[in-house]
Length: 256
Image 1 (spheres, one colour):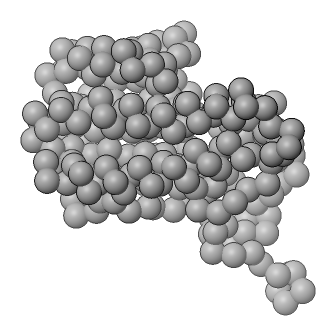
Image 2 (cartoon, rainbow, N blue to C red; image 1 turned 90 degrees about the vertical axis):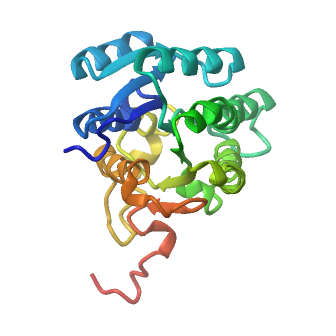
């Protein structure tokens, strides 16, 4: 369990859900982890449970100044920065004609601008460490359209594009940048008020793997990309959606 031994990771949205699973797994694999979030009580609790390998720092990913402060504190605490997981994200539902500009921009600012600010904020620290790995959490909504979540879809497509541009620009410094595209993950986001109706309607039953994923399943893929096991992978998207974007089963042909 030492795939990240000697490495320092910064994980946004690490106080719960998928980010929490990544933080716990990274620490098990030998990393020192900074959990960054706006959920201070939850973040502090996770860091305390992990132990000496983890610290919690408050971070609003839409705030440029806070990004600079968190990166500086991370390097001050652990001496380097090797891994950034841009995991923080939100969603607002609504059809285009009903979707307010305020809701649209709230999603774009967290999911898209937050990723941009994160990549920019960590580049110099990673360069000083001799390279690093940035993993941007997009979505299968960054590969196809999804009804009723236009801001979320737009932001996740943007993350996919930014990933490729960052990989081109930072590759010479030994910094790899990849995106992960989960389908449905059993986290508070999917079970909350915004998307609770989706969980209730079981939209996963017709995909090749007919179930929702668990956070640890996505965390294991993120671990691969954060580690040296993926040393020749950059500028790519890695999909973990139960085969959803591969297509859907046709009950008229498949007789089960």
